[in-house]
Image 1 (cartoon, rainbow, N blue to C red):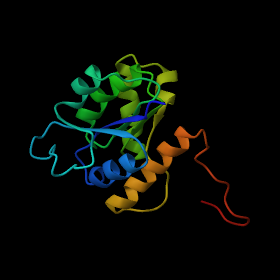
Image 2: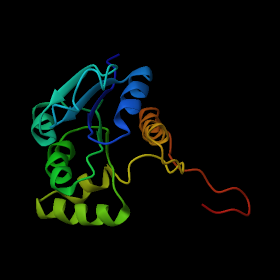
Image 3: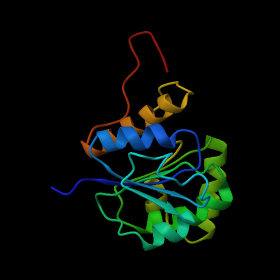
Image 4: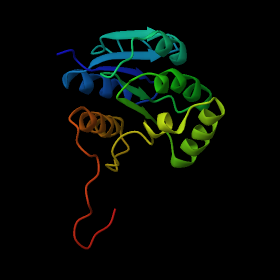
Length: 167
C-alpha cells in the first residue's frame, strides 16, 4: 500500500515535531515554506522533502490525491487562502488549517469569494487538530497528528463528555 503523504505548509513552531512524529507514524512528509532560512534539512531532518516556495504554487504542482493530508500552519490569511484553493480543489482526504474560529469564519468568506463551494469548505478542518488543551509545539503537533490518524483509520474525533461533565 502507498504511504499517506502529508504536505505541510508550515512556518510556525509546531512543524519540526509534527514532521518527525508524522514520519514516525508512516506518513511521507513534505515541508513547504517560502523562507529559505527556515525551509532547511537541518530544521526538518525527518522530512522526506523540504521545499522552498510559496505554498499555493507548491501545492498547485503537487500530486495531491485521496492519500494526501494537507496541514496548513501558516497563520496568515494572505497565505492561507491562496494555498487552500489548490488544497480544496484536490481529492486530499485531510485539509487542516491553523487559526481561531473568528479567523476561520473570515477565511471561509474569502474562500467563498473565490468560488469555493460549500461541499469543499465542509472538508476543511479548522481549527486544526483535536482540542487537547496543549499549547507547546509538541502538544500542538500531537493534537494535529491525532486528528490525521483518526481520519486515516476512519475514526470519529469526538468523545462524549464524562457523566456530569462538559467540554
